[in-house]
Image 1 (cartoon, rainbow over the protein chains, first blue to last red):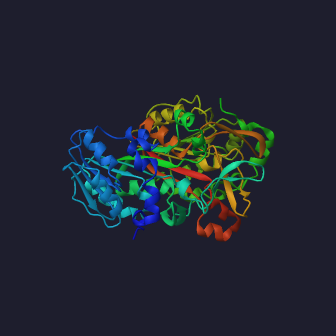
Image 2 (image 1 turned 135 degrees about the vertical axis):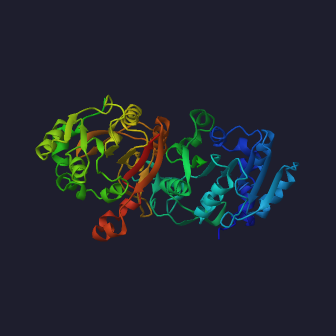
Length: 243
Length: 243
């Protein structure tokens, strides 16, 4: 079963103070790039997996989505999401993606932001998503980039000759990684880029976009400390279509 | 224009002694994985880009391919390939992939091994390949993995706390890299995984396989020094279909 770190108090206390938690989508540097992958929302029935505080669900409705089923494993996140939402067309539901089941051919878009790298049995999740979508409908998601999750000790280091580098190892070893981000012992599931793509293609999706996200020149001008993220991309953005 | 390093004598003297040069396909550790991506060869008209010594062209004919057009930019390589070949259905031709032109809808398979990471204008090459294939036909290729080509200084290093790591930097910087492999000043074109995929999808290909190749457990048992290649994959194997 996937670790539910968001219901661990020290993690949640840190997470809820991140810019993306306080400011929503506009606080997420990769949001403009993800938004560019999304279809027009008008009339769509949307499934949002790992909905967190519900920022995307509310945005989708503002943009004209017909309905949003927003699922998360964390009671903390769902409680806060419900408090921030006054909209009967958004349904928040508690669910574990590892055992998820939703009605077949009932959604026009499946979206997930930074959730799948916590999921051990992603094959099951992708199969459920494929079945949930109407034929040809889009599936758009982001994950922590495999280069971010791979290392035994993720964090830039300085080499003997003074270079700042990302200490890559274990890239092809698709298995759990335990890191200390916001709290001790956060468990992620490392997959390779090829691993994600193989799962998608094997499920019957057609890949339509694969983007290794780094900050733009404009973003770096505003936040020079972000430049290092171009040495090792933090996120991967993927779009596919059910087929 | 792409650097023609294979016609530089010090590089060629080193290259011709590599196992893959002496032993052909069986001397290339990734060959079994590439072979698994290939269709049955019987009757196929094959285009081989960056054919080198012609090992693949001869193998394809042994497997029943109808014909092979094998192109390389290196006069050294083509001369040696012709010396090793007695087969009128294999045509060796001198050509630069940057300015390549071949007849439309005339090939049932396009294959390329470890050549594209030298090509600056790969968009042109992919467009020519797409046009050269009959509709729905496969395109199979390998390149040096983007993780291999990315770093300013590619080579494992030991961190202050004694870890052996691959010193990743500049991953998102898609541009030339000058390295000293077999000879000084070998120029490669670094692209990200997403960069290769975007070029393919943008050309009208459908991605059917993306593999970040590392040695198998059996290969590591035979060659324990290869284990490190699983920390940072050396090759990327790709299969697509024209559409």
